[in-house]
Amino acid sequence: MSSDASNKPVFRELSADDPDPETTEITSLCFSCGENGLTKLLLTKIPFYKEVILMSFECDHCGFKNNEIQSGDKIQEKGMIIQCTISSTQDLNRQVIKSDFATVKIPEIDFEIPPQSKRGEITTVEGILNRCVAGLEQDQPVRKALDSDAAEKIDAFIQVLINTKKLEKPFTLVVDDPSGNSFIENLKAPHVDPALKSSHYERNTEQNHFVGIYEDELKQIKEEEEEEEKETNEETDVAFQDEVLHFGTNCPSCNAPCETNMKITSIPYFKEVIIMATNCEACGHRTNEVKSGAGISDKGVKITLRVTDAIDLSRDVLKSETCSMFIPELDFEVGAGTLGGKFTTLEGLLGAMKEQIVGCNPLIHGDSATSTVKERMKEFTQKLDEIIAGKLFGIHIILDDPAGNSYMQNVYAPETDPEMETIHYERTFEHNEELGLNDMKVENYEEDASS
Image (cartoon, rainbow, N blue to C red; front, side, top):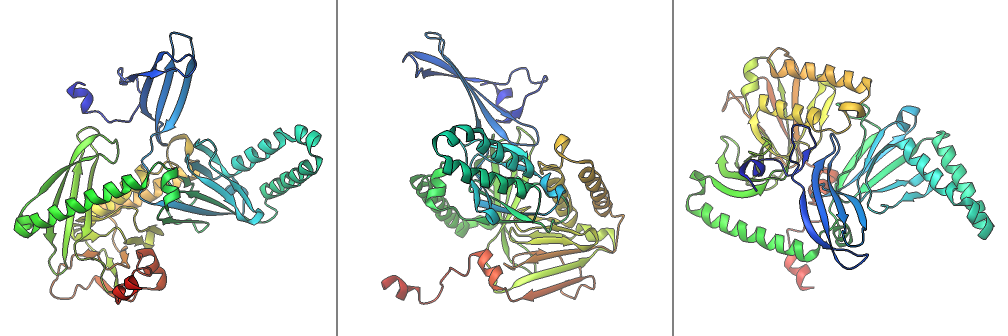
């Protein structure tokens, strides 16, 4: 492969400016005649949706041909459950991205659509109901001839689906996706949608197998991580504070090989953190991620800053991956995990937030976005740009981290900052549940192990 090709993203959009899409040709066995045929692979992107792998097989011996499309999506670290309350015609028009592995449920009518042939789709809530009705009606003539009782029950359930679509009463659409790659449109974007809730969960063994992850592989990855951690700790004991480590990774945007830099640093009046930065030469994507070097604190922390001057934008900010961010004046909230861990300035954090919310949401761009959403996003980004440019003051930036690992620079340290309030609070049961602390036993565990 040429050096120019190696600097291009692995998955890239088809374009007239890219005459060489780099198809891969593999000699494959023909299942029709047993001779060797040719499989061609093309890795590409569907704009504002996802990465896909196009496969085309052709056998010159018997003429057999076959074309397939498979998802090239990265499996997320955790599965996701999205719940949406459907109570209006506008809700029926919500766009839904259902990945290959997603199960769709409507609990009120005890209805479930399992993953079908691992095919993902972009549709609407109404489209899901319409497809279900059409699918059930398709075989009814044959059913009525073979089993009239079953056909009557299905007719009754079809009517239930039709009544559900008529919104005789509100219902809940639940998308359970172990791969974590499904979406339901947020009609209030970029604000919080009260009808929309999402949560993440650890996959069990069966779900890992379903998405193509197996225990042996996980065990190997864990052993490798433990070995790397051991080596890192040994190096840290020597001179890690003054050293930047480099290790090979894949770009989280285009999956091309790149390099990540890692360093431990100490934040004054706070604690040690691990900073990791990645710069991809193939697509230009840059990330910086921060991990706490001191574990979970005894209490959560809530930091509120009132922005009164452009100099406030240059304050150092550490936002951990468990931290939520609020801007009350914009009626805006960024949930925990949305931006990952960041160590930057307040200006940099707001810029990253804008890029994440405006640039990475597949349902607020192009033809998939309504004019209302586009107008709302335009108004929101204008105000956000004014804040970033230091032209809008009096707004409040709130960081709420139940793990207690977030920080904002006090420019008056060690004196009290008149524009910033820091409150340490006791975590609730729900906070501990999200952090995985309720299932963690740290005292007398030897007794449980022996019993």
